[in-house]
Image (cartoon, rainbow, N blue to C red; front, side):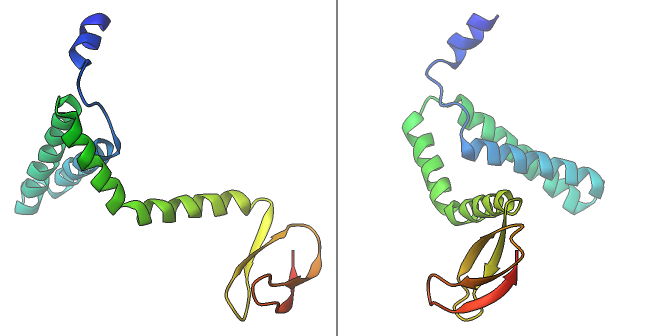
Amino acid sequence: MRDKMMRFLQGRYGVDALSKCLLGIGLIAVILAGFFGGKAAGNILYILGWAAIIYCYFRIFSKNITKRYAENQKYLAKTYKLRSFFYKQKELMKQRKVYHIYKCPSCKQKIRIPRGKGKIEVRCPKCGTTFIKKS
């Protein structure tokens, strides 16, 4: 059975970031449609959710690899700022375990100070302003 599936998927595009996003949006829309019941908004969400899921699987099983790749690159370009914002927030959360992160009062530059050093005088590397903070 595994060999048959491997042969079937050979030459197909496969899963990418846009497919994952479409699948997630589709599933969320179908679940939200269940909360609205038989109302018009629920029916529209249900149809749109299933359309997103079907398009997702169409993309996964497509043999037109160049077109699917171009669609994915366009999606990645459009969502770059949003994805990089969340990546930066994730990295900041990792650093907050070891460092305090302060902003310079004059130029708003973020400054990273090690935790557990008591009150220290911080000098901004960008503008040279000094201020006292607890680490």
